[in-house]
Length: 454
Image (cartoon, rainbow, N blue to C red; front, side, top):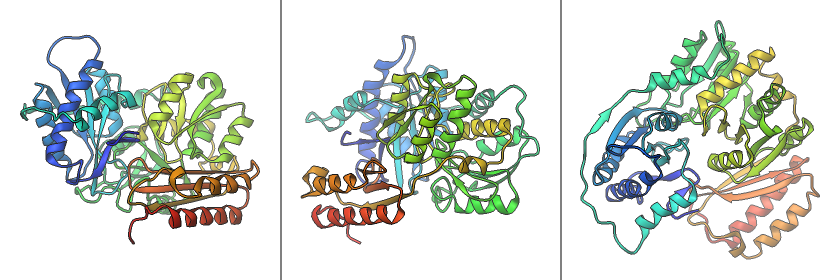
């Protein structure tokens, strides 16, 4: 991982480095030097599409980015507030040089981020990110004259909505189906309700009043409690929570119990296999997916390619293995027959289509596979020392993992988007894995010297 790019673009606290005005301009300029080289052959002025979520800081960040892009005489098309996956779709359809999304996805409002999409609608690989970083962090300073070329505003939301609906089976309808929809006060606050209503659903919406400061606050894919309770109280067929930039989603069944990305994969993979849509009878998952899911899929004759956290890693494994389905527990699901990246609304539509076709209530899909107990912990850190450099930590980890005797696992990593240490422990006994998590974190706290002050 580079010094600037994390698992999903460049992210940080707004107006702290690297999100200072001058450095944002440099990011725009560096991208303009690197990314047009990856455009398919064409003619005319280079074009970049820019979209953003509903954070108050987005407009100023866009201004500074455009001033950097303007130094290279780019035509900048402003898509306004729009879901991240819409930019992925549109940059390829419009044959733009690349796309930018100003969003920190599921993070709180004080964060923001800059994500890039190549001409093919894919997130940048590490080699291309590395070229941008070398320009930004090299000893030779970037010299350019910021210039704002003006924005060409274009509303493509209806085109994106039409694309999403085109992925559904002919004649598909949600007529009379009650859906509780949480838009996280984010990028899909207009688009998502309109799509479900166009399909005939009766929709009750929460999290659809963004004010620039309330994105993901007590709502959305990371805070599903309100959505789940409201869905059950209303008697909805299901509840759906998107995150701030709408590239992930979570469900609640008719009883108000949450279903996460693992439940979606457990539902979709066998369904797609039975219908000949699951190429190579395989899926791509991250190491955070539940061990019980892996066992269940293997029992269904479905192989699993596991990769580090990040939907970009999931996508890479899908391309390498020619797989059509992959995803993360967090709700990033990739239906690659339709889109090259995670899309929360697309995931919701494809899941609803499968559930309706099978004629079962949502609650059935969380009961038909056995989830292993998990302990998930996160700890704020000031810096991120390599685990091998924390005295005795590697030995402690090996010993504790060995004690699970193949009936569980330990996965520990630093967040790619926040100053956090994340720990996952799985096993057959909740008490055992809780003791393991406590012992491992106690060792880290004592020997790492990396903890943030409380």
